[in-house]
Image (cartoon, one colour):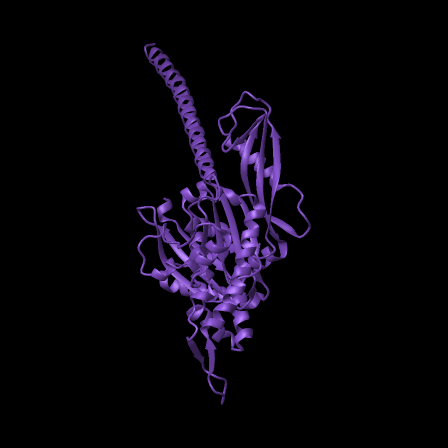
Length: 438
C-alpha cells in the first residue's frame, strides 16, 4: 500500500543539506518521521564544488535523520538546482497508423520518448520534459488527448536541462554516501508541491524560492508548468554585502541579517544600534540598524527586479491571478512580502509547507526554508504533472484487465481440455467394463 511507503527527500543546498523521512497517514497527509541537517561546505550556488565535503555533510544529515526516525535510509529523492539549469519549449509529433483508433497512454509515452531522444547542446542532459498542450490533427489547445481520435498527435514540451557534470557530481556524492537515487527533481518544482495549492496553479502563480545561493522561479498557469528560471543570487549574497558594508565577520553578518535585517529601509528605526563583539583586544563595533536595512534593501531590490524581469520574459505577467508565492530561507527576511508587492505590483504571500503535513513533533519542518525538502518527499507520492498520475492509473487498469482476460482465457481453455480428458476417461472405463463381461 502507498500509505506504508516511506519516502526520503535529500536537499543538497548551498547553505544546508537536509534529509526528511516521511510517510502518508490514513488521512492522506504527510507525517514527518525524522529530519537531519548539516552545514553545506562543498556547494556554491547550487553546484557541488567539493566532493568529499559534500559526502561528509550528506552522511551527517542522513545519520541524524536515521537516529530520529529509526529508519535505515537507502533510497532518496534528490533535488538539483543552480544557474546551469536551462528551460526551453520544444514541439514533438508522431503519426498514428489508424486515425479511427482512440489515442492511448502508450501514444502519449511514445511522443514523450521521442522528445527525450532529441539532440541537446553538448554537456547538457534532460532532467524533465513536461507537456504543455496537445494538438490532434488540426485541433489545438488540448490538455489531455487520451480517448480522442486522430492521425497526427503533437505537443509543446517544456524541456528542462542541466549541466552533465553537475548531475554526475550529485550522483557521485549520493552514491558514495551509501545511497541510491530514486528521482532527481528540479528544486523549485519540488517546492511547488509543498507550498502551492491546485487553485493557485490553475489561476496562474509564480513561485519564488529564495535559497542561499540562488533564487529559483517556477510559473504555473491552468495547472501546467509554463516557465522555470534560476537567478544566481540568494541569501548568501546579502550576507556578503553586510560583511563588507559593516566590516564584520561572516557569522556576525548572517546573524545581523536574520535578526535585524529588513527588506524595506524606511521601517528601520534611526536610533536603533546593534553592538557586535570586537576582535581580540578590540572594542565592540556598533552597527546602525538603519544602515543595515539600506544594505539589505539594495540587494533585495535587485533580486526582485530580476524576478519581475523573468516573469515579463515568460509572457505570463498579466495572467497570474494567484500572484507570487515566496518561499525558501530568504522569504523569512522582514518585510520581503511587502517589497515584492511594491516592486512587481502583484499580490504576494509567504509559502509554508504545512498544507500537506500531518501532526508532527518536528514543528520546525513547517518553516519555508524546508519547503524544498518536504516537496522532495511528496514527489514520492505525487507527480509533478497531475495528468501523469491519471496515465499511470490508466496503464495499471489496462494491465489488470489484460491479466484478468488471460486468466479467464486460461481457465476456459483448462475447462475445455478437462472436459475432453474426462470424456476420454469415461469412454475408456466403459470399454474396460464391456471387456470384463467376456
